[in-house]
Amino acid sequence: MTNQTKSQFIAVASITSELSAVMVVAKEISLAAANAKAIAFRAGDKAKGFQPITDFINELAKETIELVTNINIYALVLYRLTVNEFQKTVAYNKFELASKMAGDAVYAKSMQEPVEHAKLSMQDCQRQFKRDVSQLLGQLEAVMHHARAARVIAANSRIEASQAGEYLQSLQAVAESVDKAAHTIHDNVQRCRIALSIYRNS
Amino acid sequence: MKMTKIYEGSHQWIMFGRDEGKPGNIIDTNQYVVRTANRCLLLDPGGAELFAPMMAAVLHHAPVDQITDLFASHQDPDVISSLGLWDQALTNAKLHAPAFWEGFLRHYSCESIEYVGIPDNGGTIKLESVELQLIPAHYLHSSANFHVYDPQAKILMTGDVGAAIEGPDTPVFVENFSAHVEKMRHWHQRIMPSNQAKRVWIERVRNLDVDILAPQHGRMFKGDDVKRFLDWFDALQVGIAV
Image (cartoon, rainbow over all chains, first blue to last red; front, side, top):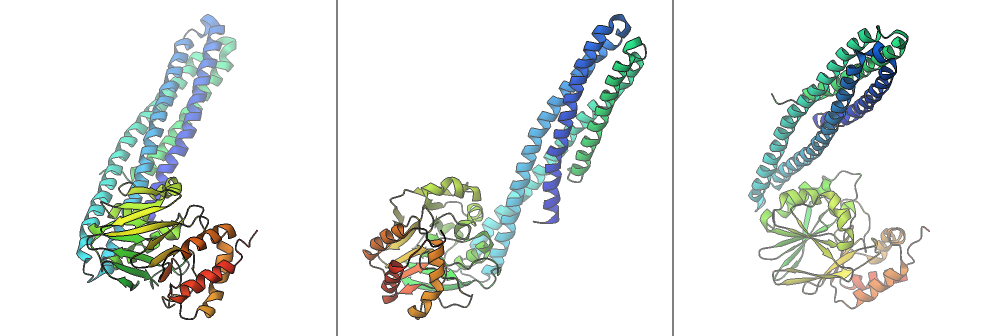
């Protein structure tokens, strides 16, 4: 296995790993939203501005979970494609070697067609991988967008929390947890993007 | 890859083995080819490491599009881990292998090649006018295992039965049976699990007219050495590691 193939396998496998962490965090945000909603309900008028924010947080968490679920399916497709490309590359190299070893064998030329076919299949896989990586990067960008939106919501939550009297601490804790989660999602997704960007279709 | 023609008649049998370029840490194997006018059958075509030299060697005898059939006596990697590569090279081929192992062998990838499962009681492979018999050899050593008998050429391909592990320069035929026995003893005692299965197989093979007994490793037996081997194997206690 070449270094290029190894790093391709690692890049694809790391996406699944990073995204499973994102999924956990997104679920935490969803929980934080439910918690915030309960606090805001108890706080009544004191947390009036906070109530619509909790809906935003919840919606954002749901969308992130949905996006990540889809990306995970896509990552699995990408993994299968990587395996396929590896097999095609091995076959091409072995066919070329067989052709070379056959030398002046009576039927050596009959190997030309399998060699050519294997080469085209391998190149097809490589092109498809680059195309799929570009699409996956687009989907990861959408998750990044959600993470940025979550940070804005966290900032707004802090402002609204400051007017919630005795509920200030509880609501600030919600804002903090949303902000922290948004950071984690951003960092994890950013690592996925870096790992994949070298394979992007130029 | 050394090539030895072992039968020439209406069709040919060619033995391939003693590959000089083979990595030292993988077991040496014998591959056999049955060649008719327009078709070619590879018996136990070998491991993935062996694919390129094997394909190159076959090209001395047949074009790629006439390699129409593969046979795997059982599921071991030295027998058939090259399947995924043959699968990509051959456009119109069948793999004859134990039906029992289908789900296992497909792990090597078998998409374009048609898997023809051999039932436990055996069957035949028809190669133009040549009909080869698939002789059950279960538990010798694999739990679903077949040997190939050609009644016309009087050759019995016996997989791991009759095998010996020797160096790359070993002659292709046994020359001194008594001296060869010690090279086979531990192998057979250790790899063959069942005395009962062994006895049933010997009884079956004694009813066949065999000139050449062709194992997947080591040397082939011809003439009187075939009977000598059967007698020796009959007396041997196997399954010793329990």
